[in-house]
Image (cartoon, rainbow, N blue to C red; front, side, top):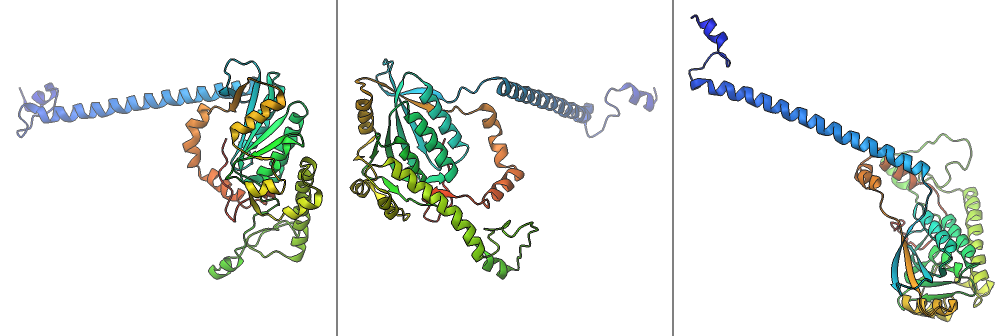
Length: 355
């Protein structure tokens, strides 16, 4: 038999003298087959996962489109678990702004429409937030107040917009503050930062293309003109007067001039706030609950709170969104959007909202 015939008849090709029995070439061929198998398996698994995510996405979209929004879920908080009459605990924590303000409004609506809820305990622990969102929550609380009493329990901080929403308890409701509560900071602020000197030093110049004199008003890259200040002073004063009106309407212990004297942006301790009539009592949440029971005439009550479950799809995409350059760029742009705020900030950016 010739050498060529011998090589053709061998399943592994020519034998190497350095590899007895042709073992080395066989190992190379098996490794190639193993890699190909792993590649095919990886592709199959990837396609399977992609298919599952795509189907789940379509299912969520379908469910969201056709299902009604039932609002927040309810859970037992304290009190008599077997009582049919309920007191609803609505919590306003962190900065008052979307999307958390929308959830608070839906929670207020649910408490108002539940016939078993006889009263509401509004727990406020917030430095405030946007003028619009604070007023929307206050407006919905006033609608609720037409049907059910409200008692407020202030946590560590109920300042600016946090105090604004507390006025939703009205003249018949009571406001409790803990001994260490800070409240007040009555006023309006539009955060604005000017970096013209820094930009000039580094050779940066902003030249916006605009259609009107005030289109880039409050831009950090140009100084405010006297006409700019006139425009924004008018906006600030209207929001400021609204704040004074709301306090004057809902605090029998204060008249309009007293409210104006307090509205310097100053923060007040619980003790000082009680002396000047900004709050009614110094006490803890359980004291506010007892006051609410007396107002509703209930000896026993089931105290419930509300919550929004974390959506699975949001959880799956949460980390991806945080690394999305487009989302990060939008966040940077939003920092430059002028917002009138009832906010106690001490010059710091808005705190992260809680929901």
